[in-house]
Amino acid sequence: MSSSSLTKQEWNFFLTRLKQQKKYLIPAFIFAIGAALSQVLFAWIAGKIFNVTFVTRAWEDAMVLAICGGIISLVAFASLNEFFHRYLLRKALEKMAQKLRIEIFTRYLVFSEAAKSRLETGTAINYVVTDVQLLSEARHFITEMVKEPLTIIALLGYLFYLQWQLCLVCSVALLPIAVANHFLGKSARRNQNKVQGQLAETIQSVNENFQGLRTVHTFLLEKMVLKDFTNLMDSLVSKLLKITRIEESVGPVIKVISACVAAIILYAGAFLVNKNHSLLAEDLVRFLTAAGLIQAPLRNMSHAGVQIQRISAGAMRIVSLFNIPFDQLSIDQSKHIQSHKNYPIPQKPLALEFQNVSFAYPSNHEGAEKNPSPAPYALSNINLKLEARKKIALVGKSGSGKTTLSLLALRLIDPSLGSILLDGKNIQEMELGDYRSYFSYVSQEVYFFHGTLKNNMLKVAPNVSDEDIWKALELAQLKDRVQNFPHGLDTMLSEKAANLSGGERQRLAIARALLRQSPILILDEATSNLDSENERLIQKGLDHLMNDRSAIVIAHRLSTVLNCDEILVFDRGQIVERGSPHDLRGRESTFSKMWSLQQGETLAT
Image (cartoon, rainbow, N blue to C red; front, top):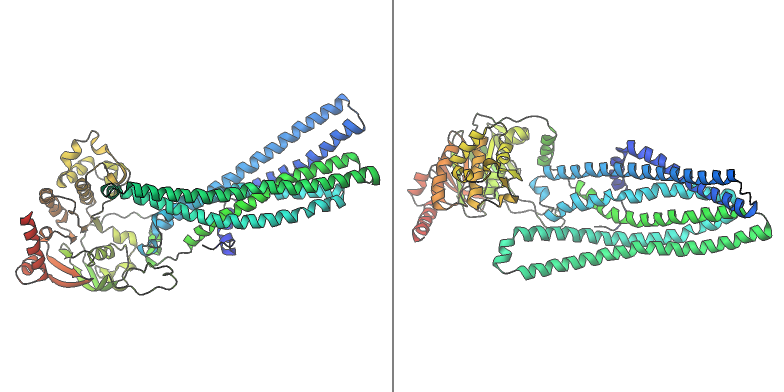
């Protein structure tokens, strides 16, 4: 990440979003003007008090009451302006941050697998949470960069009106403050870049270790993991303390410079009052008061200058996310989200055909998006046709391309070469929601949403009854188990449904697919987490699920594919063998060797 300031494009990115909140920003600016003018009135009233107290000594009751009432009114006026300025500004920025978080989340939602491969989980979370939070905190520096310059301009104008020669002395002080602000801000931005990267690494570490707790415990890696995390925390705190030192050094620097300027003003002012007689004593008091009031805005602006450099680090990261180009699949997924169309489940099974399809995953090396290198094909020159109401099985070694083909069928990725047709129509020409409504999917790594078991089922089939859910659970051999839960269908599923066993999660996923009743079914190692007895029981449910549907079955256990119409044997991204289960088992073939090997393993077990 570059440490340079925001570019014009990056500023425009955020200014465009800020302008959307102008109904809050415009009145916030007006209240900032009121707060700035109140500072000038404070300086004026200070001179009036000095004049009454030490010069004219005209302490009449009416005069005293007027001055006291004026002070109270002025404080109230300044406080109200300050409150509304800060509140409206914060509201504008919180609204902008809210919309930006939704934009970022939506972008992740529509990214294709190729685009998502450039981002790690920790980085993704960091964009949504910490980087946008930095922008939300921009209210502090925007407040200072709006109200404080107005205050300084108003006070300098008043100082110029009182004594322009002394005003020039105040103006000279701005130069060393600007120089200090420049160097401190540059250092803050550089360190904030490091902090953001460290935060992303920390989030990634927590995520990985919690997901891999079984491995950590099994191999006694707790001490190593704790040591690594402690080192991460030490490094993060060290970087945060560097930024803190920079921020906290601003105040002392400004105070020293201001003290030097105040001493010069006091000496010169005393000369003008006592020797030159060109300045009234009460005006000197007003001048010193106004000059003193400038210190706080200058200090706040310097703090803001450091903060904006910190925030710019997060801002540049966010803009870089939006600079990741959309491929066609991402564009189609974006259109799908923006569409208000409902997608009813089609009832008519259609043929799905792969014509000369090849696919290569994008290279993951650094800078691949600028200079992509050719990657080996995960699938090469695939030709197959899934006829309506037919079932084909994909078998082969791990990494042979079976799951990649299922992702292509679901249009989670697009072919590098060739085309996929549904009922003779290229699927890339179909509306994405219409196309995917033809499919149900059960994978080896099942996913459930946080909520009740019933709500998880209703998400994929909103109009089904409790009776339909119980029927699907029965076919998936899970009804008795759920009936024994204290809350039945209203049982809360913990994160990743960890309160269910692996086999129960798999059966619940099958029940969910049964409810959806899509005409094309994809089973990717759907019985992988089941023992042999449960597999035989659940196979009945799968047979019912596949009844009158087209199906693509990816399986390691060959006994689960004997009822399919055709078996395709994959090796290194190519179909090396195809035929019916009877034909392949009855002749010398790769499938028959795999079958014999698995039967031998079963007997040995």
